[in-house]
Length: 109
Length: 285
Image 1 (tube, each protein chain N blue to C red):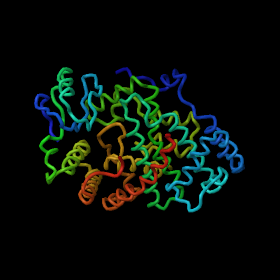
Image 2 (cartoon, rainbow over the protein chains, first blue to last red; image 1 turned 180 degrees about the vertical axis):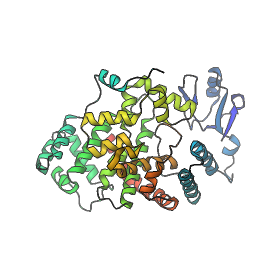
Image 3 (tube, each protein chain N blue to C red; image 1 turned 90 degrees about the vertical axis):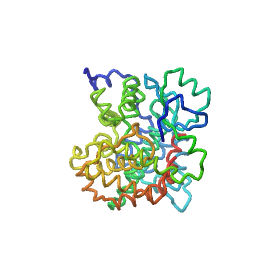
Image 4 (cartoon, rainbow over the protein chains, first blue to last red; image 1 turned 45 degrees about the horizontal axis):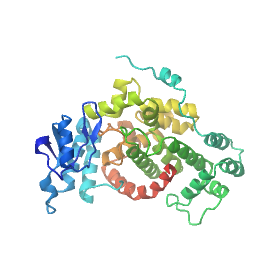
């Protein structure tokens, strides 16, 4: 996952975090693929940055760090307000071990 | 900040949802120990669509009965009054707040996925504790957050502000509710559960799932759903409306005797069970 300037956005990139306008309305949902018209539209609406999976990564199926690092980052972000709490640290460790043993992802989609 | 008085708001909403007539009847009939399976069956049979949905559920892998259940009376005898009551209740609520409904700002589909996962997880924790009424515990988990659905459907503008604040500040939905409204979805859910005359245990779970000690002597059952909610958020099953995780109440963690190894085993079990439980969402059709 990386946050890029809208001027660096390219066709084919996958949006990893929904894009909101100032009113909080969703302009682009998580998982959307950027196209030229979409990038132009985001620029015209004053959006300056988007959170994407880099095109380089999409183009490289042999990338040795696909899903798990992203999930681990998201996990750490999710737990960021409860760090230091003994029980929550234990829970976070359980999730990390489970994800590692399973190889990332979960069963309900 | 001028908070909205919850009772004032609720009293002004004329179209606050009511349970379906059939669900109301079933609640009354099943509360009477003298009622017969025939009476319950007669009440359900007034809605043939409901009959067919209950039979689908009764024959699904969620229950896994070896023989096919073909009549509603048979289903009532096999599943028992409490289970039938809970299924009718779940059907009535899913009808009111379908997975594809809402204005898109609050993602109902992800909400129901999370609720389903909470039901499964609650059931698995209860099983580990040796409890008997596992299907009832499942319904506690499935319906614990109905206050959010009420807010989404009947406090639209206020709730949109809540979700916006959640996204902007990356905070818990409950914290945003308390900041903006002065009350939370658990309180709203509790008031509506009283209004609907939901079973006492379910009402306590809805009202106190963020603060199990307030359920007093019922703390253990409320703690089950409290823990299930946090575990499902931790592993990312569905979405409860925010992307943060609330702290587990220490007394609840100890009361249920959980630890890292048990939680890891639970995660594996949840994943297996959730496929069976998905059958329950045929109620959403």
